Length: 151
Image 1 (spheres, helix red, strand yellow):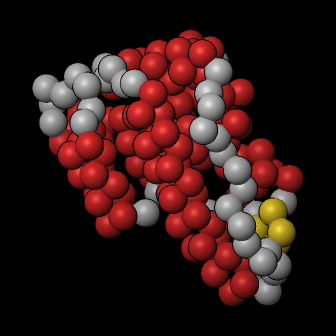
Image 2 (cartoon, rainbow, N blue to C red):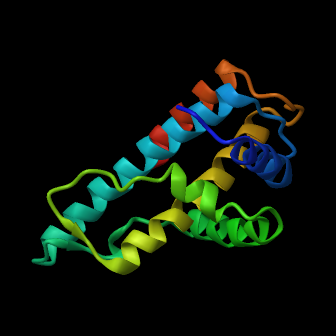
Image 3 (cartoon, rainbow, N blue to C red):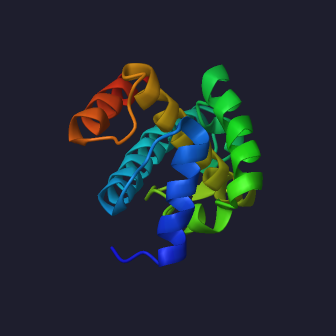
């Protein structure tokens, strides 16, 4: 994966703004993998909802967005207005493969969902280790296990 320097700087600013964390290029790759996995999980559930409702189109409201994730989506909007993450997030947010189609609203909304998940990730790391400044492999692994339980 090659990232533009501006993208690296954007993600560094994001993690500092979201949770006071200092990340490096390896963390950016971990973050991308994390987002891919979380979006796949959300889309699997959205497929089930769409199918149960007799549709082959995934709508944004089919995604299982909890109250906590919704709050993180709002926090992402605030951080995004300071850091301008949308372009960088679009670059790392491919649509998860599915046999269903995505509505236009869902295609556009998944970027914000990925942003909310990113805020939740950064803050979860700080909750797991309040003194954390530079996430290490163990911090990423703990956060991934936590999200595997919840999303």
